[in-house]
Length: 232
Image (cartoon, rainbow, N blue to C red; front, side, top):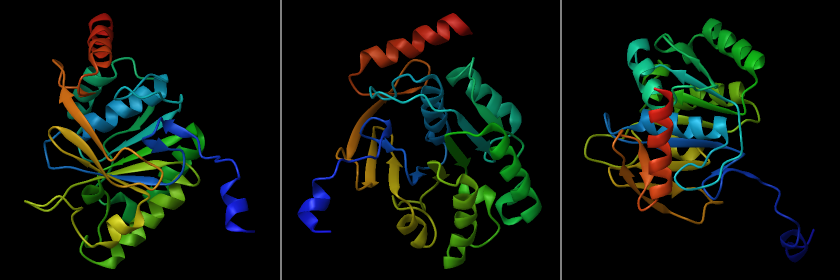
């Protein structure tokens, strides 16, 4: 096929989140400890599950599964009460440490995914899910296991940077392997990698409930506040 003919073909990759999250590939979300990565990911999942805007962008209703290995059950419950008090998505809690490196538990996750059939999956977080060194290329073994678990579904992996740096901690194959790389900072989301994404930076604020909102998007902020006021 000639290049000009190929370029004339219709694009067929839909967006789960308009202009931000495509329906293919996997996303690496990087941010410092305690910054709010889990809250950010939970908000995104809540918006996808309900088909409501996220950071002022339209979403496509998508069933979600959140594998929580970074917070104990009580902490995770409090986050969800704040972010998605009536959440209809699925979550797996009290996930054993290093479980992606254990075939028996991987098989259990595979069965869960087959049962609930989510359209989007979050793995939170890399450090607590794997037993291999983050600083060797062997880290691709558990990442490839997550790829197999997700199948054709898009998914997100939460990770952290080394102290004082913005890149993903560990071997450079982690960032090289993902489809999209997002860096969450105090006042912005930087899109470090994502060939389909034209916007490379989104300015952010936190509302009165500690939820992430696109800066200047008063409708999204007030919408979350009203939802929480009705449902708590």
